[in-house]
Length: 75
Image (tube, rainbow, N blue to C red):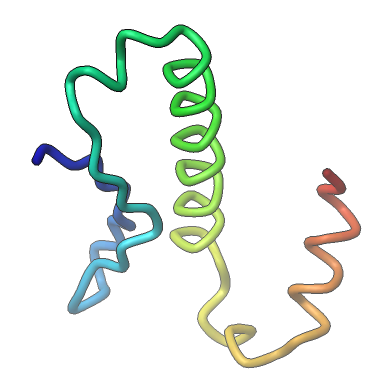
């Protein structure tokens, strides 16, 4: 079954991180509702991957940075 992957792309990283993975069937795309929801999920994953790619490595273990990001980008 085909799958969609969104992965980080950080040149200095030794390994990419899978942010989103979803298996889909061609028949799933026949539904406008499913297709719209899929685009929304992929969009969120792209935003998450972008944040991970641009995060300061010195703050990875600092929970206050994550909290500040959550406050800056509320749902």
